[in-house]
Each structure stands twice: as C-alpha cells, then as structure tokens.
Length: 316
Image (tube, rainbow, N blue to C red; front, top):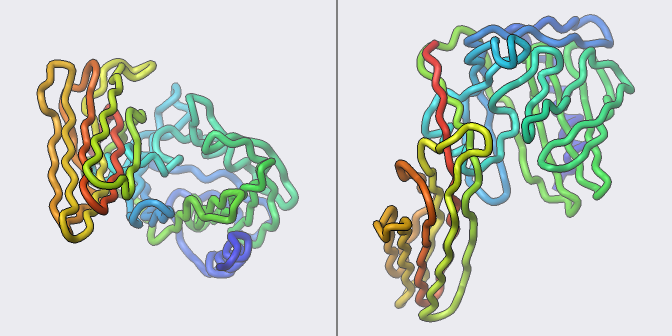
C-alpha cells in the first residue's frame, strides 16, 4: 500500500490545478500562505474513511464567525443524521470552534494549531490532536498549496495538504505507528452561500464495546452511568451506533438496554444470517444508570457505541 507521505505528494500535484475558492486570502504567487477569512455559509464537502467504519461524506459549513468573543468560527454540518454519526463515532476533529487566527481546532477545550499561519517552507510548530503530541513541519509550499507532515514520538504520522484555493484542507491523512490509516479526509467540493439548517452536536463517549465469536449460549451484562456533560449540563439525547452480524445455522443475538427503572430503552434481535451495519438511533432524556444485556448463540459479531449529545443548530 502507498505510504501516506507519497499520497500527500501526489495530492499536491492535483491541488495545484484547483481554482476558485471560498473566503481565501492566500497569496498564490508567493512561497508564503496567509490565513483565509471565512464567511458564514462557506462550505466544504469531505469524504471520511476509517478502517473500522464505512466511508461517509459530510458537508461542513461555517455557521457563525462570532464564537470565543468574536475570535473563532463555528464549523457545523449540514445534516442532522451526519452530525449524529460524527458525534458518536468521533472521527472528525474539525467540527465545532475554529479560530480566526490559525484555523485551530479545539481538543479538550484547548485550541490546537494544526495549521500555523503564515505557512512558509521549513516552518515548524507543535500541537496535540487525537490525544497525541505532534511536531508539524512544512515540507514545501508551491503556489496556493502547502505540504505539511506531523510526526509523533511513537512513529505515527499526519500528512496533510492545505490549499488556499480551497480555503481549508485538501487532504488530511492520519497513519498510526503500525502503518494503518486511521483517518483519510479528502475534499470533494466547496463553495459559499449555503442556506438551510446546520448542526453541531457536542458529543461525549458513554459506552463502547465489541464482541466476536463469543461461542454458544453466552450472556454479557454491562452497566454504565450516564452523567452530565462536564461543562454544559444535561445531554439532549443518547446516540447509539450498531454493527451486528449472525452466521448461519442457529446463530442469534439479542440486545436489551434498560435504564435505572428497568424500563427498556433499546431492544434488538438478530436471527441466523441477519446483519445490520451502521444503524444509528437516539434515546431521549438520558439519566442515571443503564444496563446493557446481550446474549449470543453460534457465530456472531456485535459492536455497540453510545454517546451523549447536545445539539446546537443555526438557520442560514
């Protein structure tokens, strides 16, 4: 498989031919790229690929430019379903507040300069993303594009291309120390003047587990506590994501989620040969303790993720 750095070099050649852009102030005739100025309604359509989940496409939209006392944008998503998916899978680090000065994303409440403007060849800086400390180096600047590599002490890499013709990332690829691509983010289209409702869901992981080939007649029971968001109070809802597959013959899965009053909040049953991949849904008004009970028979696979969500929306 091609390395991420090789892919980044290839995307630079493609990016150099791109024209036009939302809110771009970059100087395409120099070896220095300035920070763009985004406008409310600017948007980017990205594909997201991960090793564990099916690919998805999301339209990121500038919902506000007045966050952090006027120092940051709010980058939201044009579909409530996609906003929920990104909240429960938590693989998109660039939703939410983004600073005006460096397009810095926030992780654990701290702005992280994944980009540092003006972008110039041989520039270096440090940031934290995916709970990992990175040192970024600008490999090259050509016209409107810059190739940047982030390296971590464990051998992980982030290879990304910023394009002032796009006004944001052209590509962003995170590869772990084993050489597995954990995230590939590629721009498909972009523009300005988006209209309609857009959403940002402040998510928080509540439960995640995977079971495969547990054997015949196995019951698993797990309890977890749904507490408030650390700073924003009650969750609006819980969001669940399920992948389930049963083999042939007598293979079955039964799933039940009950709250602290033993009221059933979620029930699913899969029979022989059944599969259900990428199913999402919501559970209203979460509070207190929940108990998840799963029974397996035969050849089975089940993955369950549950997150709390607080939804913000804007009408553009």
